[in-house]
Amino acid sequence: MTNFALIGAAGYIAPRHLKAIKEVGGNLQVAYDINDSVGIMDSHFPDAAFFTEFEQFDTYCHARQVAGDKIDYVSICSPNYLHKSHIGFALRAGADAICEKPLVLNPSDIDDLERLEKETGKRVYSILQLRHHRAILDLKKQVEAGPKDKVYDIDLGYFTSRGAWYHASWKGFPHKSGGVATNIGVHFYDMLSFIFGKVRSSVVHYRGEDATAGYIELERARVRWVLSINRNHLPDHTPAGQTTHRSITVDGKEIEFSSGFTDLHTVSYQEILGGRGYGLEAVRPSIELVSGIRTAPIELSRGEQHPDLQKIIKS
Image (cartoon, rainbow, N blue to C red):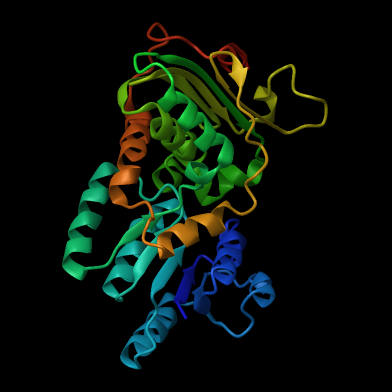
């Protein structure tokens, strides 16, 4: 049986990892979080050890290694700014790491982890669940089967309302979360490069604590994009009472992928255990892009603006 440890057991995304570990036939030996609201563990692994002190968690993992019942994978669901150090812990403890996105905040972090992989002989895997979504895979096949010189026009708009708690939490501090583009948008950028190729240029039209927007040219796409966590930014055509609006159009045609997310973490785990997981080089393009978005100058005159941007600027 494959043994797992989990860092960040009280977090929002942890239940998907617990479910995935269970569904791939894994055994969760131990979990850690500074918060103790982890009753969800009883639904999956009621006998797993749990610690709120990292030192105790570290000691437990080391004891398992010494006893010959070592942990094979450490699943990481901690805040973004802790990912690198927690991945480092996993590799040094003799385990492979499975980490939520964004894997790290800066491209230099990937370089450091590559060196650590070579040093320890262990691997780092990222959860890139959109790469397993059927609608995304179908679109990728469609693009690959189409004219090789065709460049597609993409509009990406993602509005997901967040309350005041967001800004008070670690997510509201760019040095911890990476800001809206990193925390909310990184999986969309990864998906776009997965389908349409490498980034050729990137322009930022707007960057604030609750929204960001810009224009990206990929090898085979021109992308106008906007992301917001402010409910006042919801497009006017959003149905009454709806607090989230997500839209991706390709040459004016809507891509429907609002459903089909339920089991994508399980699929990701199956691929990793089957030797087909996405490693460090797979995440590098999206991390380079979001790192650039955080520091790029605001240039409204360059590139095409997303049609929903003006409402954000005026608000």
